[in-house]
Length: 115
Length: 112
Image (cartoon, rainbow over all chains, first blue to last red; front, top):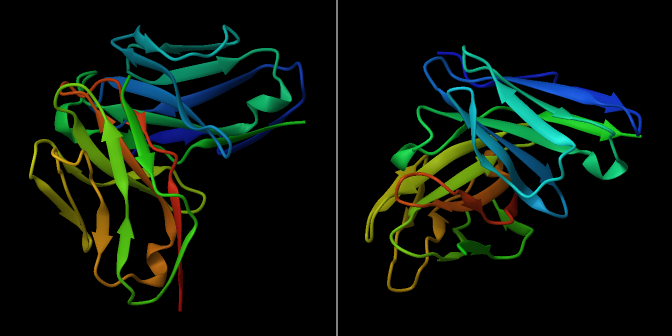
């Protein structure tokens, strides 16, 4: 079955702009989590959605937001981009928000560069 | 709070060498433990997992044993290949699979 699909793979934006990233989870998976990966900070949790509801949120400013649709696809939005937002944004899906021993299945990520 | 500590990288080995990447954790209760691998330009892939003390996770020649007494989950492989070059992340979650915490990652380079 198809894996986790993230679009676009690469994105270049200018400071002050906004951006929307998309994630389609594995068919049947209802939970989607987002992570930011940078060389300095490693993997940092952004938020998690299940059944169109945000279940958990990391320590990021309000410029970072997300949503989940009824088909479990998720989008995250970053407004007023800053240079420090340049990162690999990873989406991870799981069957349920209680992943149990199964862990996550990650997508290949969206590489965002802010110039 | 929960945390994961990994050995500093990068680790550079010759092909067929023995690999150990150390991972220790701090957690309340009985976490589940994971190793993920990230190949260049890709997302993270689950390599192996263990859910209770003394469990051994294994996959693709890699192994790790859940040691509660030493709060460790060290990754080992008897003979590495060039294709094993990647970044390896140790991670834990609570019993319900919530509150994932990832280590900083260890970059492995295997030379032919």
